[in-house]
Length: 102
Image (tube, rainbow, N blue to C red; front, side, top):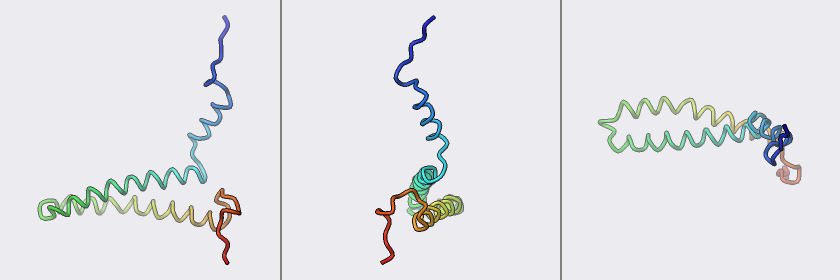
């Protein structure tokens, strides 16, 4: 029996897909920062809606406010990590792109 390989089955493509799914380092941090930002936008939008009827939705407003503590802390940590990596010179960008301190 002869098995024919098609374009999508190459080992190079499988390796790159496996490394992309690992999402570590700078790429993983970028993904984490983006995902956390999306969660924050959704939660802040719902929180804004509760302000309109604050008398009736005070319990939801307080719950969402407490729920926002985790994503805000995660966003600050991931953005701080990117900031530190960028200015330490290990952030994966070329030296010509980085700002000079002058």
